[in-house]
Image (tube, rainbow, N blue to C red):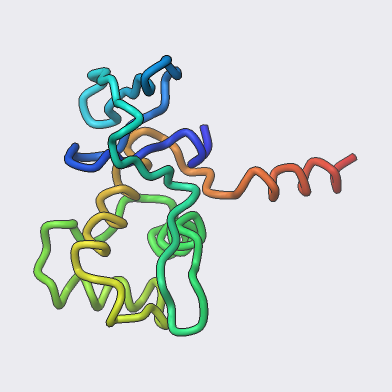
Length: 142
C-alpha cells in the first residue's frame, strides 16, 4: 500500500487507511487501533502523498522526507519520540532535512512527521517510492 491511500483526518489522532468511498464521504480504518470511521466530504482530510515540507529552496514531498528518515534509521523507527522536547526534535529534523525552512515548519509539524513515520513502520508500510517511480522501475526491468 502506498501513501496514496493513507490519510490524516483533522481532529483525529494518527493515520487512517482509505477503505472505501460512499455517497457522502468515505470509510477509513485507524492504523492505531483498527477501528473504522466514516468521514464526511466536509471533513478536512490530507492524503500523505500530497503533503510536502518547506525547505529554503523548494517544497520536498513527504515521501522523500520519509525516505531520508528511513535511511538514517536503517529502516527502523525513529531514535526520537514525537513527545520529546522541542530542541531535540528540531536537531533530529535538521539531521534529516538540513535545509528545512525553520520559519514555516513548526515543531508541531515535525512531531506529526515523526509520529506518522513510526505509525507507518509499525504497520509495515515502508515503501515510500512514488507510483511514478514504480512504473519507471518496471519499464526499465522490461
